[in-house]
Length: 263
Length: 263
DNA sequence: GAGTGGTCTAGACCACCAC
DNA sequence: TGGTGGTCTAGACCACTCT
Image (cartoon, rainbow over all chains, first blue to last red; front, side, top):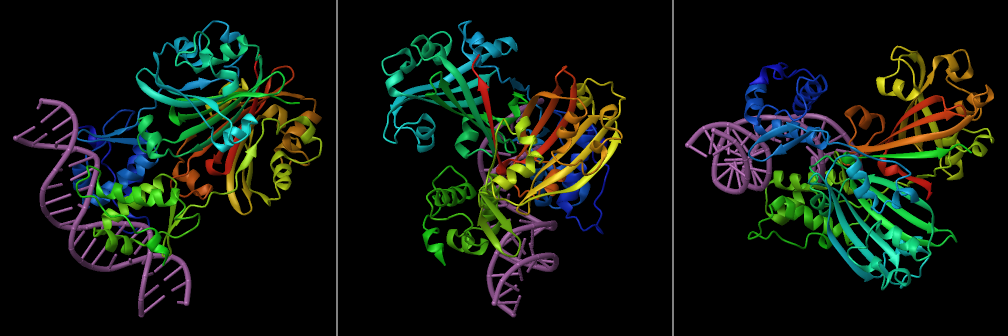
């Protein structure tokens, strides 16, 4: 019953600001000031109705606003809680450097273990298909070319954080471990290098937006959490693109870090 | 009255899916299939109520869902419209390379003109103050050190797209053009290099989240659009950090691109 | 003035959770 | 079983936009 620390303010009927926004403001300030801490429960809708003397819809509008800002999550039958900031995975720009690959582990697994988190890769599916037009473009392939398509989902400590779909030109991958669900130690980049395709550089393109309903389901995203879309293209030494990886990441789980030379 | 192309489906009362989600599904599919194009108006709430035979709140819940996904924007007194994808600014990882600076233009202005867009920088404010703890940390300064703080807002073709706050150690900036609202040709990086602080490398850290109400106001963001938070640290040749720039960007206006070596 | 979305009320029934 | 949030109804009045 620590509501006392929260339900202190009242509506200003003279204000231009709508009632539900005023209620949201009060709760937002309470969170910012630490009167409501991470994981703590907000007053229930009933309590808020009683305290402010308003209809339920008004309270719900206020709570929805906070949810859309990513500040709270509602749990059916339990209550509304201050969203806990999940541990953030920091992705450094050298994470695909050859030296890391040499240890025989794929990038995601190696990093997770370093962070003392339990990684999981599931929903692995490997097919052969024509790539989307933008992917074919990046690979320098004609639209009707065939690629090996590897899709999978990554989880950390039981929470899904990222889905990824890789496209590799079929002539590079067909009949090799790259076309197997389990490509072996070091992942597909190790396999590509073994077959003479020495990786030279990567490009990454990053966008952020709200998830589609499908993405929200696959990543178990609560409302108010955007996603990164990261598209990585891998080039071998002779300049040919050998892989495009299209990744959707829960934005609250990642911090992307890059090093840039100044010249 | 192209509603005919949209109001074709009906509610399935046998479905487990709630009515408002079914309505949202119909409209989402109509947008995906191109039956509702960018900038086009959705049927009004009244029309949707009549067509589906539901209460207004049910229709509004459906519309809110689409708005939260970033698919539509509501305009008071006018209608609900399919959100137009704004032109995207692609930021390449060499945008702060010295050669660009030599031309005497700050990065934002130079790029905008190349893209045939009209740039604007406003809300410029320069003060001297103690930096936030995380910034002091990046600059390698004690918590009570003083910095010159430069904040400004960037717009493109009349639309605000980015706010930025730069922190420069006071001993580097005080009394120089860096502490002036207009730092002169090439921006503050040019001034730093002129005074012997040759820039060597940058790091950029990227997060994405929903905007705070303040950020949404400053960038005129409609609901459903996340922001990038990009924190850039500039290092001079001897390894000292000489600037931290904390940037909030409208995520629908940017595509961030990076080049990574593989070794 | 007619039509649009924004806010708010006062109810109802349901699904989920914890005890 | 009682409390929680999720869905839905049927109204009301308001603010905004366009003509």
